[in-house]
Length: 471
Image (tube, rainbow, N blue to C red; front, top):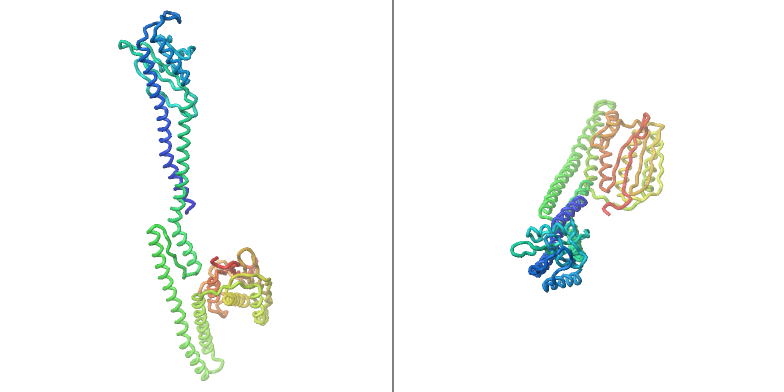
């Protein structure tokens, strides 16, 4: 979520900074140019005041009648050009120069200078020349009319280089860009803190939900910062988890109590059946059937009690050699397998993993017992230990009739037994107990076909972690 939320915040903040920075940059450039334009307008106005009283006129040649005001105007223009490097001139309406600096600068036939000159002939002073940008190498032209007796007698034109102005604009933009960069870095830091503050309770809630989903029902959302809505959600989640745990505890307690309480009357009932059997023939079929059903019910009650204890007990995790433990269980079940005519073989190399030794032993007993029980005489059961990556596995594969795909999807459900195995001793709770014992320690159990051909057998894989759960 942070990877999606953080770019969105950064894009929004960048858009805000650009929306503020671009107009400001344009305003800075316009202000710099406007300051230069105003300065040039003042200069042209001063030259226009000097030229207003010049009385000589062009006679078709460059020679004119000497005039003190004209000489003063020429000196001012020459000094202006020498000091500032700005070309300036006063031109009659015909375009002939009254005075100019440098001396060889003449009014061109076209371009910006001519356009400004023509505009001034209409008695309009230059006030809004086109904007010059830092990447442009243009010049800034300003013209002012010389008014004499209410008419435009001449035009003062200045043609200024823009290098310094463009440098000032660029310098201002660099400072603005630096400020925008600093503001962006501050905004990114604030966005990181903000997203961390908002999402920290979400991450804690997600981790706690995962813990509860994997069987650690005691996990709760710790108090953390964040918006009030998320803190309220965390408290509500803890209340919900408490209620769910209480309901599960009540269910487990009910199953355990019911199993325990039913055992006494069931034992008394079986005793009375045995006493009743003394007065009946020894091979009486009905009494034998009742006795078998009573023993089966006693087994179901015992398994229910074991299941309730398995779901309630905390796992005592230890770093153990599951190869050694599996070899012990294979050796323990070998006599029972041989008595049934089944060969039990094991490949159990040393492999360490984190597991509850008692729980893992009980789970392996249940799995090996099932494999031996359903494997025909003359076949074999293979037990293999493997360790790679962060998981270790114990695979128990038999060569029995196996299960169909539909039956494979249901195996491990409580009280479920295949219709083909209803006459085989069992309650249908063994694999459920095995799954509960393994889940308490972070392990799991899966079922698959052993072989593709018929009979394909059953392959049961018990998986335990090689790293300590929770680290």
